Length: 304
Image (cartoon, rainbow, N blue to C red):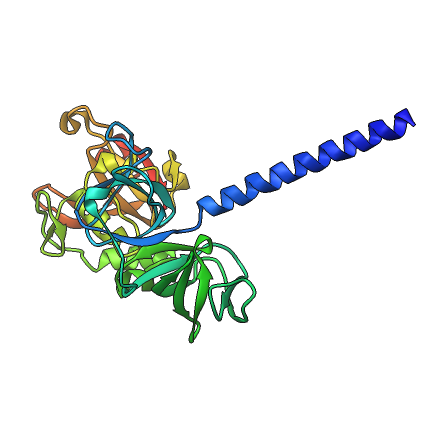
């Protein structure tokens, strides 16, 4: 009898633990579901690791970037997600969508994700999308995005789609191959060098890499050091391990003013990188990095 009672107590305890674990799992899922859609209203907006001006900066966001709002109950801050980065932005530089009329783009985060006829898991499945597929987001309803994809209009639950752009060109390139990045960058060969420049009228080094990757859905800071320390992607420290499309960084102590990096470019393969150089024969050019100046001051690569 004592043995049976002990067994019953153990079963009951395990049941309680299982319920608690299910509750924690459900809570974690809820934290990933959007409560609203917002847009940034200031350029170079800092996405921080916590709701405080003292919190570290995860990355920088441009103006008019669509984001998923995960928590709108914080005093003076919103918890958001954009392009896979979750953090906090000041409420002073965010506009929350009220009329549910907007046009943005999202990237599917998972394979076999159902697009449904309404904002419910009980509704009909209209089509299925796989990881990195792009959908047009044109509405929001109770934690679900109203989207257009694969020729149908439907709904995807917000924790299966990451907001990642506001332009058709960016959305069309998202998830593209490394050759797409390199081809896009090479369009600007010969563009003049311009200190602080970040457009086809003139680039500095980080302005060029920022501009290229903006068209692939990334909001990189406008400094070489900021991009290296952005938290994006995977770092590579050996030139022989670089792949086309990787960001590459360099540090010449005479030019870095004590910062981690003084120059940035994009690896194109064959031991070469494309970058905007301030040298006399500069502008957007392709240079070797397996010997000479760039080999000497190579810091590392970043694979996004």
